[in-house]
Image (cartoon, rainbow, N blue to C red):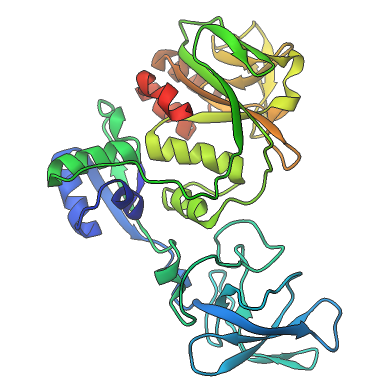
Length: 386
């Protein structure tokens, strides 16, 4: 289990250092094997404000800007972003700075114009996959402020060995509950910033059979799946996640994919509930059926491998074929892509023995299967989906 020090502090306002927190958790509930400082590679980045911007005289796609980096003078910076906005704050790498990828910033001429620094994109800073433009910052910070002091990015990861009999500790909420009890503090779920990765939920199903928007959802394999809930989310625009979400999940050891996948990882690492998002437009017959796999049934999973299911697995099927191996891995056929505009979001509780058997038979181990094998909190599912 990877835990973010700052994420835990968002649940419980404790004053322990990462090392003191390691000692507390180890003595109380679970051994902390490592304490790892993250994002020291951003130590050279500061906040810069663009005060002037004009088209490069010798290029139709470059800008010549003047940047206030808090030094008392303005830096001439050539920038290739599609849009540069005067008055906006951006991450700025001054001359001598080293970017996360190892690039050292030097003063140089670009098409005849001097450039003494670099305005950075999220991808260049390792904060997401967006590289189409520089990273505009909607924050209140003075030019020259260290980026790590202004933006949630510098964190500490605790690598924790959680015993099988403590599945409640496989989330930040569960760990925070232990910390709160130990230090005598109140615990509360962190507030989500207004910029949310998902849009509108239209309906939710929390019974053996029901409707979710235009979809019929039926739970047939009640032995393998003890509870299944779903929500239909419309008006989705898939794209890069906001910086706060990327920082949270990457501090926990996950990789940012897009706002939809990152949101499901946020729920898994934050609250211990694995979720799966289906592209609703790819589900045949507007049906979702939770059933046992058929003899010889095949599915191409998200890792691109075609697998034959002969392990009595729980499958999530549409009106025609299996679209996911429940509790283990999703299928390529209903994968969320940049073109997705409507998703069916799943939250479920599967029987640990069935997940363990399927995982061993298929040779797949995922963050979801790890948690389902140790059981999740069935009663928490409605609240998490709501």
